[in-house]
Image 1 (cartoon, rainbow, N blue to C red):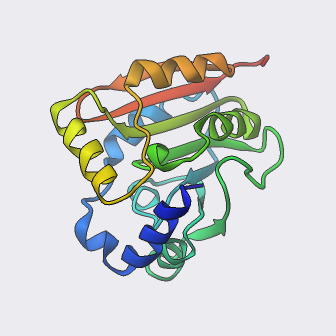
Image 2 (cartoon, one colour):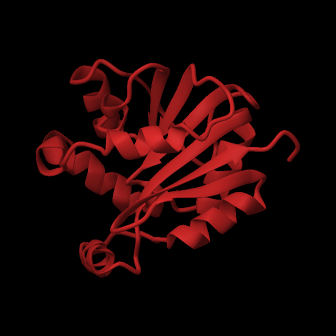
Length: 194
């Protein structure tokens, strides 16, 4: 799900990750999930790592999917979350089998963002929502983050909100830019017909 170097990095920093990262923005995620046109009973937190985003959500059955086994181990051990080692570009779930998917602070690490979006659209039931919380590379702090991640050897590819919304539209999701800033949220709701 991440570039190979990125997975190695997250495996190494897993024990310290939650100490360095602030909690996920539960309000922004909830605002994105509010766009779903169906009840949310089953949610995938793709690239969910240690379960930081899943911990900010309440209500649905949540499964954390991540390529870093060390981060996923923390989600299971520390937070008691259900977890599955997997690739965002090949989700091991049936078509139209989940109500919502979140990708929080991880989309820029995905080596094949197009495949990840296609898989999200495939696994979402009609009316289900994909909520991506990301960092805007056009924001001053975003430019610093991009430079910093590239300086430590990550293969990160950041996208601006309008670009991500356009990519969602192209694959049959009705996109909404929920909020903007250094951290932004885009929600895409699966249309009835793809």
